[in-house]
Image (tube, rainbow, N blue to C red):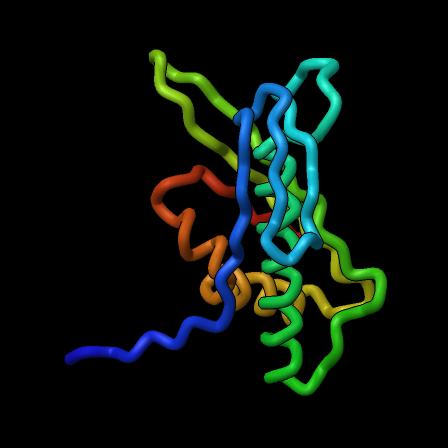
Length: 139
């Protein structure tokens, strides 16, 4: 059976120079960042930081959707501390990630259910499943 795909948004970013003194600019002008290699004194952010920011923002939105279904609101001080490791194993690069989630004021069982549902529905979690070693932890 064929499913229709509805494209909700297309991000368009033009990048030159890669991670070494590169620049990335979005077509709408909202993103305009300098890039640098992780762990160097270069001016700019690196792709791993951008990935961590994107995944954590998307994951928090997915938790918000899960909370809305349960007729509860995420606390205003909900937070995600995302860590993305750039790894090198036997000459091959890979990523490893940890999302440390704080949901103050929400009962532990409810918070855990929100986190689990978000991990199933967040597009970043879905895209990385089986490809990126990810730990999702409620703190």
